Image 1 (tube, rainbow, N blue to C red):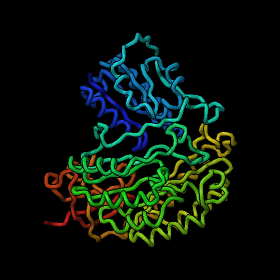
Image 2 (cartoon, one colour):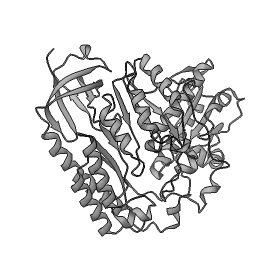
Image 3 (spheres, rainbow, N blue to C red):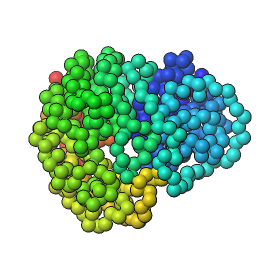
Image 4 (spheres, rainbow, N blue to C red):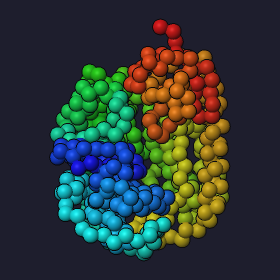
Length: 462
């Protein structure tokens, strides 16, 4: 059968999608990128915040139309939304044939092969799952335990030269705004031998950059009583022929150890890049969010990182509009961003999610005020980044070419070691021959300009 899959949400969800595609391909099915041609459509959903839930619902409704207008005979909904609202989805969207939660990835083959059932079509315009005052324990029959390994078939959905490796799954933290532990289960690390084996396979297939991901990447191995496991893993991966860059995403303030920072600093293939979601800088808000640390401990941590890893690029995310956040709390965060000067930053407006501890609190910051605070914080970050980017003009850099720019076929888009795919800014290479610099190649270039967050560079003549 022809299988079409739409993956939504984070890279961790994308890896699940790639595993499902790999399993389908191993079972003899073909994969198509045209949903109109697909006999089976799979939507791998996200349910982290309200906007992600609505995007997932809209995608399911759009794919459901192909049962009426295309070749689709089965619609399968997987991922976090299916884990969280399994019964509601089946009841409200009758076109759905199967729902699979985050721990049921291997069951995708049975879901594809299942008997078709008669479906009565109804007009679909919009659907919203309404919040209910339910406890976290009511969302899941049992917590997911699934975790893929190096022997699991996988079909990459990224560009051929970079790939994500999920080194662990789940989370044991109790952040008051977050539903992920309920949707993904307890934290569980993969054995290092499995990760190294997967990385070797990817490198042999032409992958030049691997990106290590989990809910808390610096917690890796601690659940297995393996202290220092991440540093040892980085050093093992650093020895793999063919790999050029090894990147870490989703680190946690309390689990970044000196041995991990030493490995980042000393391993030539490990990107000098630290992704550290801090969420806030007001002590009062951090306590309400059930996050570890204070503004002072964060400042000390960032100083330690910059001291141990010279020229490190720092990325973070913040939440504005959390219940009880005052203008004073926000101003403290605003000042912290100005004082710290992150290289990359994302800002989310607080989403009042059922099943979280914060759902019992009044969502008392108006939506318009949340957006105002987000925009004000991002405006400050934009000014910080623009000044830093202008200061880089004239510097020579090494660029990983991702491919042609979308809006200009003679311009190439690439990244520095300090830029992660999909989430950070890019480098645009001009005055170059695209045929001599295919995707996945590295080019030495001189930065000749800056455009908001992005850089403009010219390849160095060979």
